[in-house]
Figure 1: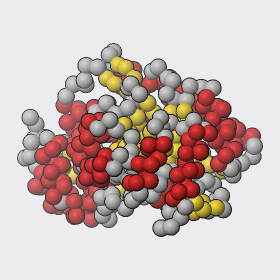
Figure 2: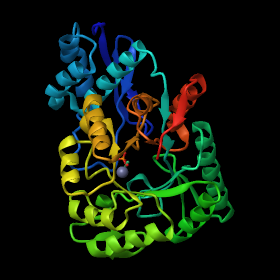
Figure 3: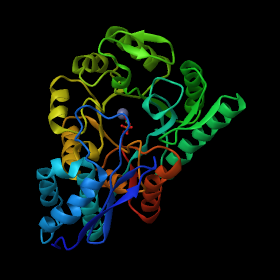
Figure 4: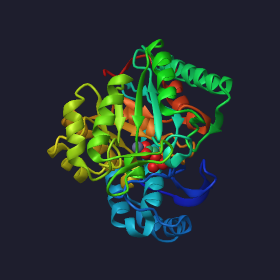
Length: 378
Ligand code: PGA
Ligand code: ZN
């Protein structure tokens, strides 16, 4: 096994034109994404300058000479999480992963994920609806390129429709479309268009973002809902628009409410993101209370590839569908695309347009170069 020979870090820009940490290990890179609607229980970032300085002046020296093992490197990062933050740790953990990935052959048979793309946005990412993300996934596609083709076709159809109706208002933080359109009008259109194209709709409600401690306050809609009413509302829209996926339909502490939704919507993926924050302890709580059928995996919520893959493995063991996901501020780092293949994760939530295509293009490139490949069984 190779050893860690060189380590360095610097500031680079992310898609919000904010500084983030880029780490370099043996000539391989990793950079940290950043969220705008973060879960309360996520690992905490530190100031970018502080993380860079700590890697360059202290931590790098401690890591040099260590065997090139993800587990060993991530264990050291974990011990230094307070100084390095999840941002420094994620960048370095990604750099190690990319270095290790490069040193081993690709698996003989590759299982490709289905893309799950944010086509219309609101909430904390900017836009005219309270719900953060309206997602689509081309579940009828037979190949990864076909899936990307269908997803972008629908993105363009929706964009044309918004422009034609004179309601288009550009794109938001995740490259999703925004516009002055009511949620029901948008959903009617998407339901018709996705159904005609072998595609299904999902939502990331990111409900903690509009929970005020007593009610879900839908500012744009000018209404609010109690927890009970929110559950009825979610059941209603799931049935009306044949939703296959609902992320964070309730706030991040409501394990019981999630469980009720899961038992009422047996055919819909009830997905934890802010609820579970990729953390095995939170996931264990969700498993115990039967709260979720699917979970978002975001390595920077825990600051470690090892921990993110442990959460993924625990999901799979318990019949919970893992979905690996970008953050609203991204770089062109493709580590999570590689992780999706490595851990056979059936869905990738990487966005549809702008610089997010780096990750989709990475998978398209691997698809085109590999002989033995199948789409995930879903
Ligand atoms: P964030 O949102 O990356 O801005 O936190 C993404 C999500 O909630 O899935
Ligand atoms: Zn989310």
